[in-house]
Image (cartoon, rainbow, N blue to C red):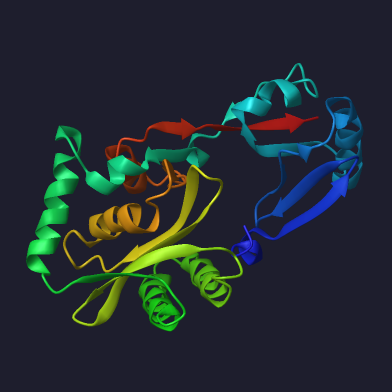
Length: 260
């Protein structure tokens, strides 16, 4: 959330024992589900938000485990599934090993990459290669900004991440081909079992490179994790197809709720 704060324009406060996060986008203002607090204080919080907001407001990113709790605020309203924001969560061993028939296609891409690039080197992201990784990421973004101006915010997020890599507790890996960084991926451990892989960039002209960085990060960056959360598909058809093809162990469903 920190590295994307300029795009999402996040604000936070603590009220009635709840942590409340407000998000302002160009076309919408909403609130993430409140964290903490007591159930009996939720009506107080909702009334405070409604007064601040000047009318009805929306909670987004509501997890299934919170449906009953927040549903009491608007018993006559239905939660709306926000499929585009559901997280894809995979078993680390599945992504690291690509075993079995269901990963046959990904395994072929990975093997083709290794055969065509025998000199490739995987290395952990560290202070000695921060600058090289960032340079590659900046070039990746600049090549796409003319057709998709929103990629500018990806560029800003990458700059924030590499400047604060250690402070944010990030870890990741990169692939070097012919001495040059051509791919990287990084994220953060959420707890002892689950990590969140925030960013993955690769030279799309190199066959199998995306599969390679995904596989080697799973193998070498996250060997201590049981699950890898590779986040949502944002409704992008190609991204959804790619994420589904990796056979998630489960999805983290999210919903929205309008409080009138």
